[in-house]
Image (cartoon, rainbow over all chains, first blue to last red; front, side):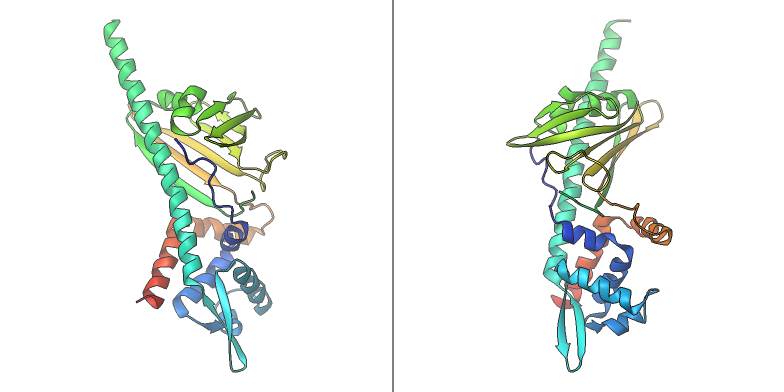
Length: 122
Length: 150
């Protein structure tokens, strides 16, 4: 088996998504497109200040970007980065599926062999 | 390599008793057939071992040994550091017998650091974790694709 220590070393990305509040913010941005921090603050159970902090972290991780529209700053999801994160995560899961598949084959072969041996020696 | 927040949760049903599956996941000559290319490991809590993957490799530290149901180790921590919660990934195997001849094997790999979070946040995390990481990201990516990549 190759592909051992290949966990994506993207600390900022994972820690950005790890926080449930930021996941909520991300969820809202995905479903509503470009919105302002105050709009978000009206839809989450935490303060406007907390929303701003979460937006900074998400932006630093590359998951969202901002643009100015008139006097307002609007935030939107960076689709490519999100897709990249989803693919990296799916690859990690697939890696474990392959390992579990190999364990299954090995254990089942060992079990079959044990049974044969028991039959040979009654 | 610090990976807070990352959780992978997978399982498989194996047609073999838990004792057989246990040997497959804990004996070094077996581990080298499904995981690393070279394995140095003593299966005892706190034991330091080494796993090599081709030209890469790294230390592992055994955490829980409870045959034949629970086995866990930490890996992916920075070189020269003792792996603890916060600087490493924890891999936890749980074996659940289903009848005499079947075993459900579950693996959870996590790097989340929940200790520093307030209780309400932890509860919410546990609640949202039910969706799973892969599913959460997949769902968002699909939504995004639908919305902006027609």
